[in-house]
Every structure is written in structure tokens, then in C-alpha cells.
Image 1: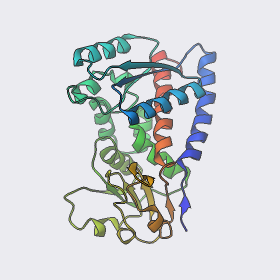
Image 2: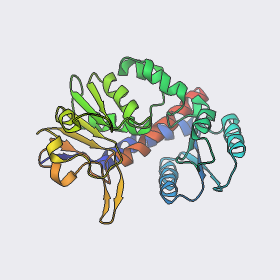
Image 3: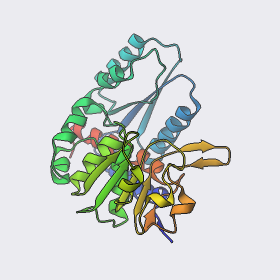
Image 4: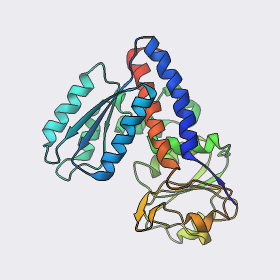
Length: 291
């Protein structure tokens, strides 16, 4: 029976550490502030932003929420981002994706100042990540790491999973999870393979994994015959089925085969929000000049 890696519990520990850090910053006159932008009425997006706002409140981080109608025009959204970039009281800016089809998401993400890009999606920050060879270099740079991939690394580290020399397989090649997760795992000295829709015999590739990260957006895609005994499984997927939420991994079938596995919900999701808060506090320190 696999050890269940709880993102909920790990996130609570990280938030407790952050709350102390925020208290210290407040004592020095620095009020960490995260500005969120929500365009339209997407229900899932409203839930995600609501969770982020509540977490800010719990930690003592100021939350500045900006809600825009679904028919807002791109120039108006870009003007808002420009104002937030120039606002010295705002340390982090998050524009919730997806955006309506008439708005160019890439253009919007690029408009956010790299110094306030607490999602870690700006090309400058992604390029910095690509240029680093190991975690020591990444930490020295003080970079904002993409939240979900960074959450994955923290889950593995805090669960005492050895990444050094491990064979890691990532199912999914998105810019949000797959690619940056591969870079961070390589920085931890894992040997990384990325699988995608055109990978030949994906099951054979997955069976090589000591650490398997599933981030393909297909419910229960990874089945028991696709993993070896003793694998560590990180399930990034959140899929809504009639019987409830499930991940990209067939949890019930794999849990008896794996060494450790994350649940859905309660796995990677809470870690994504925790790492967003980590980036926001880091941004507050950086932009205020307080160490």
C-alpha cells in the first residue's frame, strides 16, 4: 500500500512558515500584496481565485482583487496591468487563465512585469529557469518558479523522495506544468523523459519511471499496467466526472503498486496556491529591498 503524499498537510506547513515571514515583514513596514485579475464568469476560475484570496487573508498578505466583465477589451486589461505594474504597493500580479478567446493570453502574460510575475510564466523568468543547471543556481538567482512545478518539487523533497539520479517520466508537455517540471527535476539531478500524444508505446516509457508526473488532462489515463512496482506518482490532473473529481492516474488501481502517490483532490492543488504565496512574499522582499 502506497504512502499517501498529502499536499494539504504539506501546504499547511509551508503556510505556517510563510505566516511567520509575513509577520516579520509587517514589523519592518512591508505589507506583501497580491493583485489578482479575473475576467468573466468561469466557475472554476472563480473558485481558484477565491481560494487564493482566502489564503492571502489567512497569511496576512494584502489581496487586491480585480474583476472584469467577459466582454472587456484587451487594451483595457493591458491598461489595468500597466497600472498594477506601476503601483509600488503591489508586489505580485496574477491574471487567472483561461482568458476569453478575444484576448491574447500570451500578450497579457508578457505585459506583467517580470519582477511581479508571481506565476513564473513570463518569458524572461522561464528563460532564466532554462539557463540554470542546478537548484543552487536557481536559489542564488532568487527566481519566481512556476507554482505547480515548484509545488511538485516541494512535495517530493518534504516526503524524502530522492530525486538525485532517479529516472523521472512526465506525461504532458505544457508550458505551465510539463516543461518547467522537467527543468526543475533535472536541476535536482533526475534523468527526465517527457511523454506526449505522439510518444510511441507510452506505457513502456512510463514503466521506466522511478518518479512519474501525470499532467496530461485525461481522467485516469495512467493505468496500473503502465507503472512499475515501487514508483512514486505525482498526479497533477483534476478532472470532473459524474462520480466526482479524479486525477490523470487511476488512483485505486495504482495505490497498491506504488511506493507513494498523491491523491486528487488534496495533492498538488493546495501546493500550487502555497507556492504562489511563496513567490508573493519573495516579491515583497525583492521589491521593498528588505532581506
